[in-house]
Image 1 (cartoon, rainbow, N blue to C red):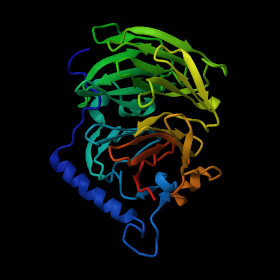
Image 2: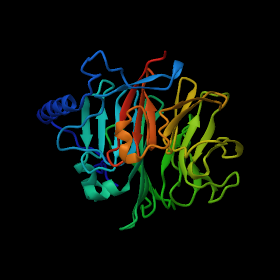
Image 3: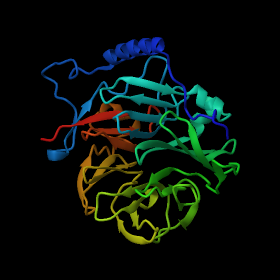
Image 4: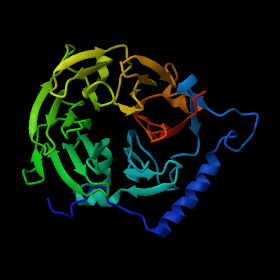
Length: 361
């Protein structure tokens, strides 16, 4: 792989961004509810209660005219509180926003060219995004699904924050100094431990969880399909929880409705049950936030106790969910910024990425 092989490197010119920003403002103004226009008789939209109260920011995340979201894949935040949003869309493949909602960058066409894809193929394989702080630097890990029609995908990429590919592994990947083949059948998520070890779940495929060291040397693989501990049915998400007594690996076993917890060596520890299709995780201020594909977000404390359920939209038809701004339909991923504001994206045709400000009662 040459140094010119870049992941999502497209940068808009200042002139284009001024144009986009103006269009975005116009679009936002057309879609702002009466509560955002300051009408006193309409209450703001909130989810949760008590300490776990969040208020919808109705203007955040809007795209310019000519761009649109597809099915919502991932949302992640970096140390500068830039919010990265990915969806199954050709334009943009990735959108980067500030906390305030300013569109900072969009990445699309150049990515497709650099990896010999069309934007349609990018759209067909998009899935996970994880941001890792490693020493003084940050990195992006993109997880790519399989394009079943053409047999493409099943790869994981590590890039710098400008999108330059540093390493890739997966099916049909050549063995070079910065890439290696690995028998993923349909990977879904990545997590990185404090020591640099990398955990990858093959959640839409083999139901295996693989551990690599920081140099991508394969250390261990566990799993396979099933319901017993150490087996999975859509091991969709993975996270290394660091704010408890010791780091542990949390695996979102979505179709089994549970979270399986392991040591860093992937030895089974315990299980959290009574979840509704958990997808993935984000840890903030000692709590673990879990988007559940079956219409809600759950918050766990340090002892794995459920302390809040947010936006439960169970029973609402997906086609009617926009009539219920305080509810979720299919939360697929989430993140929180440095002040605790919550960002959620859903597996809906328009992605429905939204920001909820933390407004504890």
